[in-house]
Image 1 (cartoon, rainbow over the protein chains, first blue to last red):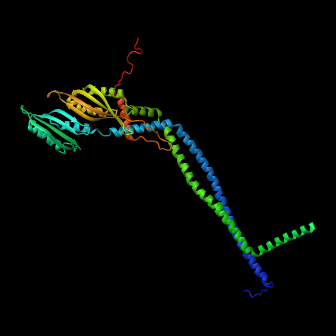
Image 2: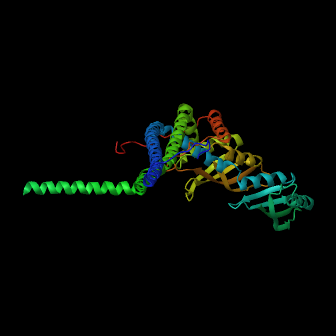
Image 3: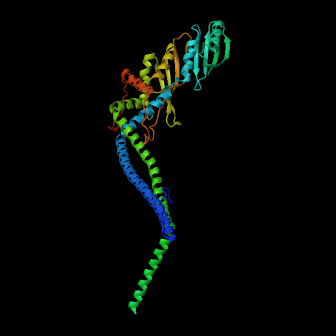
Length: 184
Length: 246
């Protein structure tokens, strides 16, 4: 008896019913398998199509690269000129960016020396060490020079050490001194 | 006999086919998914995975090629935009300032042009040893013996170091012969720089060097020297007779 109250009589043999069940199960599996296979074939086709497109793109990009490479190669002399110019300017800048130690110390000390002192001899060696030989009319001006040379404010903090190498007073009353100045 | 043999073989084939068909019909619920599974695995491992990995791999190489191509395109455009005449002019200025080899005559001419500004006179000039330990910057020494006013030594040193040709004072010696004399004997040792040409002048893959504002300023300073410095000429004509027996 079904829900509506009508009766149904199945006259088919049980083996046929099982056969039908098996068949429907097979068709279900068959459908799933074929769908899976078709899906895989579809994905594979798309992948292969993408690979073909990509290969074409790579060919085109390589062609363009070769073209641009050729363009740059044609302009190689111009590039070499620019490269050389940059190299020269960098080197010139590196050499000339700062004044030499020798010139700096010479200019500084010559500005610091009081006007009434007489410079007899000045030497600045390759290390930048300076030796001056001076004649002073009195001790005060020599003292003034030493104060100025050792004062950080006056010497722009460019002098590391000042040493009095020799000092004497001559018969004419003049003071002679040799001073060694070491730059910082 | 032959005819009956053929018939029996045909019958056997037919029977085998029937048996195979029957076996398949009976077990197709297992055989079919297995066959589909094997086909799928073959498709996945032999086609799909290699193709996808190639697709990914080639994508990065495509990006690389495109990037390289773009870089070269921009470089070529930059090179085309350069004013070649101005570039050659600037290059000549820089090569004049920092030559690739020792140029003694140019240095003599330059020093001679600097001295009148400071009232110094040249007593002697001696070329000394060269230092080429650095690959980019080498120098040779020039010893100058000069006589001039005491008060102008600073100016002389400044003008030597500020000229277009990179020169640096290596040592100074000044002595006053007489106590109240305004003149001084000065010995200056100069390092005069030159720089050998680089062995490689940029490869295609190398980015183009950019001239900074500082570089442009330096070029204009060098150009100013050319326009303000009077042309100094050194007599390069061969001396002596071509045939000494004439």
